[in-house]
Length: 502
Image 1 (cartoon, rainbow, N blue to C red):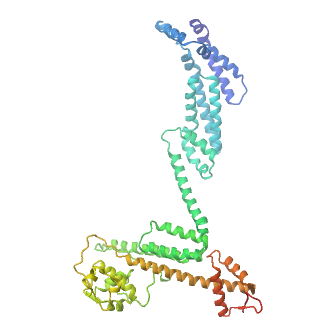
Image 2 (cartoon, rainbow, N blue to C red):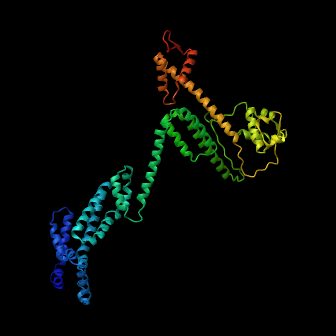
Image 3 (cartoon, rainbow, N blue to C red):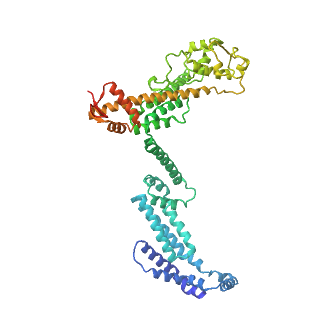
C-alpha cells in the first residue's frame, strides 16, 4: 500500500482527477464518452475499494484496522481506508463541478421556459445526476450530491418559483404540482406554497357549495313561488331583528336567486337589501354629524328606512296604534302609559285588535303578573283561562311587578300569530296562483283557439313548471271561472273541449 501510494497514486492523482471530471462534464453536455473508462480509473484510484469490502471478512477488517493503529504517526498519514483520500481528491471536485453546472443550467432554463417545464427539467436532471453518482461515487456520497442538486435547482430559485407557480394551481396541473411539492416539501420553514394551496382549496370549496346550492337544490324546488314568499318574510325578519350573520351573504344569495329565476323573482328582495344599506349609511352619517358637532350626550338607537311596498310588514288600517311598534303585546303595554287601568272593551276600542286575539294576549300578561284583574275569582287568578276573561273586566297595571330574571319571554302568543300569518301567507299564495293559472290558460287558448280538457291541463302544467306545479283540480276550477267570465266556452257536441272566446 505504501509503495502504491508513493509510486502511482500521488504522482497521477491530480491528472486522473482532471481527466475524469472533464469526461463527466462532456457527458453532461450530451457528448458520448466511454463511461467504463471513468470506472476503471476509479478502481485504480482506490484499489477497487468496493470489491475489497465485499471480500474482506469482519475479522480481517478488524485485524487490518488494529494493525494500522499500531503504526507511527508518519505511517498513518496514508489513511486507511483509502476512501478518505478519494473523497478529498475526486469527490470534492465532482460535487463542486455538479453545483456549478446545475446553477448555470437552472438560471438559463428558468429564464426562458415556463415553470411547469422547469419542474420537469429539475426532475430529469436529478434522476440523471443520481444515476451518474451511483456509477462514479461511493454510496456514502450520494446524500451530499442530492442535497447540492436540490439546493441549487430549487432553494436558490424559490422566490422566482413562488412568483410564477400560481397558474399551476388555478389550472389544476396536478402532475406539475406533485413535482413542485415533492421538492419544496423538503425545504424547512417553507410554508408559502402550502398556505396558498389551502386558501385556494377553501375558496374553491365555498364556490362549489354555492354553485351546487344554486344549480341543484334550488332547481329541485317545484313550488318556487312558495319558496319566494317564505324566503321574503324570513329575510325581512332577519334584517329587522339584525339576526343575519352577514348582510353581504344575504345580498349574494339574492343575486344567486336572480341568476336562477330572473329579475322579476327577486325585485322585492333586491330592494330590501338596498333599504338596509341605505339605513346603515344614514345612521353612520348621523353619528359622524354628532361627532363633528361634539354632541356627546346622544342615546344609542337604530333606525331603518324601509320601502312600504316591498316589505311584508303591513298593519291593518283598522288598528289604532298609540306608537308604531312591531308586536301586539307592546301596543297594549304602551296604552297603559295613558292610564293605569282599562276594561277589556276599552282596550279593544283603543287598539281595534280582534277580541279573540286580544284576550289571548291579556291572558299571557296576566299569567306573567304584569297585569292584574280583581274581577277574577281567587281560583281564576291562580289559573287564568281565556274563557274566564269577560269584556267588562278591568285590567290594571301591576306596579308591584318584580322579575327574578333580567329578561322575560313574552312571545308565546306570537307562535299562534305566526301560525295565523303562515295560514294567511298560504291563502295569499293560493289566490296568486289562481290568477297566474287563469292568465296561463288565456294565453294558451288564445294561441290554440280550441283544446280538449286533458291537453289543456298538460299545456298549463308545462307552461308553469318553472314557477310551481299546479294541480289538475285547481286548473279545472280556474277553467270554470274563466267560462263564467266568458273568456272560454264549451264546444257544442264535443265533450271536454274548450274554445277561446274573443
